[in-house]
View 1 (cartoon, rainbow, N blue to C red):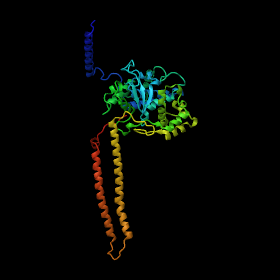
View 2 (view 1 turned 90 degrees about the vertical axis):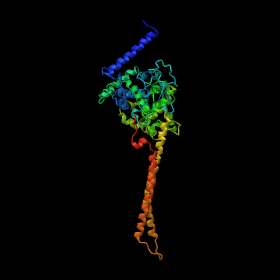
View 3 (view 1 turned 180 degrees about the horizontal axis):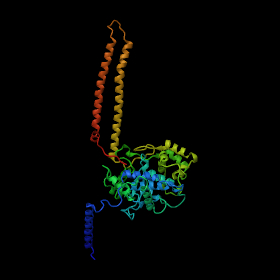
View 4 (view 1 turned 180 degrees about the vertical axis):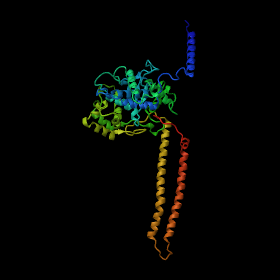
Length: 453
């Protein structure tokens, strides 16, 4: 048997030869162009998230809704972490932590690091997951929060986030159940599988102009500081072209947080005393997402849904919903960029995105000023000549002089109005010309990029 370099050379030639055979078969149509599961588009990901929340049971058993919450959380984790379904089996409460404006999730074992050699809190294995407050149907923080607060852990020492064995197989079954529902029999869903989420999220990152660039290096392999946060904001559903890209997650004010801890977090979620400290840091943020989206949750889940039996919705007995509504209205902070009260700042926002937001603020300010000036000019040009006319009529006295006819005064008013309108029109034209110079070529031609998730 050949060995050493001879064996390596033969294997290399064999692989290259096989590659040529595969290429030839694909070019002639003998073999499918794409292999494996299909790439999931952003729109399709959103549809699956919505379908997961709609899973119902025919019986009034515990399964009524719990499977849907599991599928919802699993879907968003795989999409936002660019990971495989195997990850759902190895997530433990110790792997969750909250820092500033995002959830930090440490994945100890990946396809490229089976031994977990690089798995520490500062390594590429730590993913940053962001909230998308304007898109609750696909918001990963809300999905994780709903699952976390609805599970009965009691005082078990089991620290797995997704309770039970073989969550990979369970998610596959839930996904097939969703894909078999009405309206999901189209060709686009035929090759969708659990691996489609990882393919889809990476493809989405690569397709964004001015986006993260080589997302394999930044979301799957070696990560440079700040790039993973940028990817996290995009995958959560925040639009890079929007000034709301730097949105902060809804969070409790200091007074609101004090009210929560006065009651006791253990009354909102089962098993709180057994949780690791890192996971406990996540819970106030998780709870804030539920409170902030309370009205939306009422539309998403029927009154008999499994979710409404969770401790968080019984902490005040019959007054719980009123209490949560009060928290939402008076003790939830929702802002962009930086929260002045708690000091939370946005992370993962590149400078060019911040510059775009500032330019849009400047244009909005200019448009408001232009409108105010236009209204003022219109009011002055209409009312001032009339006021002068009325003043002269009321106070005119002959005193030996040749009296003016009323027609003379009306002519004076008309001339004054015409002169003022001409002058103000020139001013407005100058402002319009200045505004057009500030606009870029894309706005002037009507061309621009497409939307995002």
